[in-house]
Amino acid sequence: MSYREINEEHIRKQRKKYFKSSKFKKLKKERRKKYRQRPEVKENKRKYYENNKEHIGNRQKRRYKLPEIKERAKKYREDNKEHIKEQKKEYGKRLEVKERNREQGRKYSQKQEIKEYRKKYRIKYLKSRNGKKCIHNGRLKYKERIRDIIHNFSYDEWREKVLETGGLCPECKKDVGVDKLTLDHIFPISKAPKGFIYTIEDVMPLCFSCNSSKGCR
Ligand SMILES: [Zn+2]
Image 1 (spheres, helix red, strand yellow):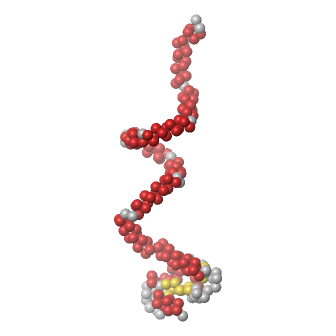
Image 2: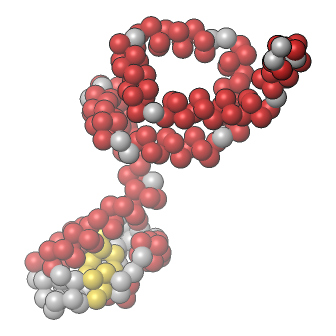
Image 3: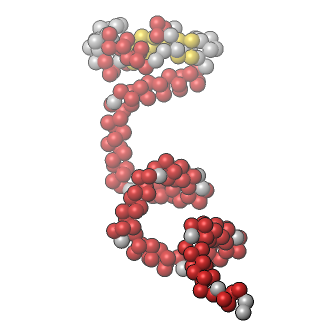
């Protein structure tokens, strides 16, 4: 009798033990991973998914409703916040995703209630400090573009100067309110040489009528 036949029972036990060992489990895991990475296996998986999209989707939906799965997903999200963020970023960079998002955004902004909301919000924004700053800087930038000059002062500096007047126009002494005072370049920009730098000392607040009559001079 061979060794194998004599020790059949022993070999069987040994084998069973080996299959339960962590060494074997690790090996199995690695083998499976390698198998899944084979191009033809990947391709087959993709094909299967393409052909059974609906079925797979429904199965997953059902699965996600199970309480233990919900709990596990929640825990995963909490433990891998950074990783998920990173993945989302990568996903958003994909061309087809970008195109889809753009399309959805277009549809969204065409909705009547969204249009109305934006209109309302815009009015509110333009009355806020940031909105006023935005308008102010926009006007100066526009003048810089068409006249090739530079404004070297901040919105806050200008605002301070306006508030100092208390809403009175320095020229005609009419009380027009701080929000109605406009920016006047003391040395007119039409006569300024190329690259002329306007500091806060070179501008002053004037009411609209004073500013426009000065512009004609
Ligand atoms: Zn005035």
